[in-house]
Structure formats: structure tokens, C-alpha cells
Length: 329
Image (cartoon, rainbow, N blue to C red):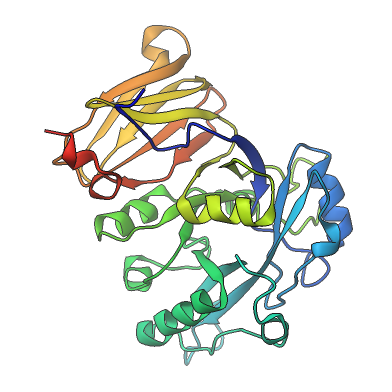
């Protein structure tokens, strides 16, 4: 219908992705080939190889059913006077390469930042330089990093931040951080959100403490190519999940329409309100919800939870960016 504004694209198909994982190239237990086999066998089509401080383009792993995203996880650590502390604050940032053929030698030669914790001018300049090289950047696991609002509010130019990190959830039940995402959105920062594994695979896949297959991103693209997947990531054509599916998401007239797999609750979230449709109150599951949308709202996003307590999150959409004000009240 012409009066629909599609937040998740109408066309294309979804591809399941893990966008944070480590291998024997850094501190993971699986080789890149073993990681590919494990994820591909469980229905994943995309994996980013974000080894610590090691940029690699594993293009040899690409085939008609699997794409390896060239990437790296860099860090900027706080160095304080008290060296007896077990760990200081740190920024961990994933860099995903949208153009792996561009200046490949420079990237493979080392692109880690200097250790200048809290220097927002330097960090933002570094992120800008990485963007010019072809990278999009994701701010990772703020809780694990011992950070608070003051530590991340000054970051600019991020493509996304993690709203869920399965490795952190396994480590200490602190993997889910939607409040940090909303805090950035309330500042007017345009960025998407990811659910990831951050897997190191210290335990086998069948073990209950395995850190694989817990957080994933569903990318909707019209073509299954490296450039097609990266283009969809840049444009925010995806949602993040621990399990539930967000099948359709669009604005029709003055209503936000959400269609999901069976869940207990679907919530619309803005900068100052939460509206929920709860299946538990109705005595069953819900698969669709409609919420009023006002042009006075700054941004909208969707969160849903299933009977297992697993969440899925849409990206946040600023109404001024999607043209709603032209047709809203």
C-alpha cells in the first residue's frame, strides 16, 4: 500500500548473522573454518570475524550460502594509578569493513587506536578515520566494560551499539542493556542496535554454557552478496534478537504495525513512553500489535518478549528521518 512507511523493507529476505565472534586468530578456541561450520550448520548465513586487534578478511570462507564479514574488535583501555584493580574501564569497538578491497594492505598492517581513554576528540577522530577507510563501528557491551553514561555519551559517528551480548549474559547475567541504547537515542544520536554472541567457545556447542547461538541479527537484503549485506546493515534493514522474530514493521496512516512470531508482549518505545500489547493478559500469545504514532514523538522502536523471557529489538527510527512528519499530526 502506498500509505505505508516500511521500517523493515517490504522486499528481500532475512539472513541470520552473528556480528561478534572470536577465533584462534585471537583468544577464541575455534579456527575460522570451525566457526563457519558450527554457525552454518545452525542456520546462519553471515558471520563477522571480530578477533581482538587482528583485522582479517576471511574471503576464503565465502560460498553461495555463507558470507564472512571482514572485521576487527579494537579497544581503548583506561590506565589508572591503582594497578591492583582487577580491571579498569575500557571501550571495545567492532569495526565492520564495508569495502574490504579498499586499502587492504593498510588495514592488515594494523589499525588499532592509541590508548587515550575518555579523550572524545581523539576517539571520534579515530572513528571518522575508520569510516573513511570503509568501516562502520559498533560500541560493545557497556556493562562488561564497567562504563556508564558519562563514558559513552560523547561518542559520535557510531553505526550501532550492542543491546545484547550473549557472552556477557553467560558470564554474569549482564548481557542485555537496552537502557544504554535509549540514553544514546535521547541525546539525538542516530544509531542502530545489535544482538551478538561475542563467542570464544571455551565450551562445546552442546554445553549449556556455550557462548554461541544466543544473540543474533536478522538482516533483510534483496541480494545475498557482500555488498548487499553491508548495504542493508548501513541502512538499518535488520532487527536484533535472542529468539523472537519481528516479521513486519511499518507505519500505516498514523499507526505503527508490528507482526511477530508468537510472543507474550510487544512494546512500542519512544523517548518518554512505553506502550505494550501483552498476550499474557489476553490469555495467550500475540503476533500483531498496532500503536498510535504522533509526529510529536522523536523516535520509535519496538521490543518484544516471548514465553522464555527472550527479547527481540527493532532499530530506533527517528520520525523526522523517515518522512512521517509530512503525513503525521
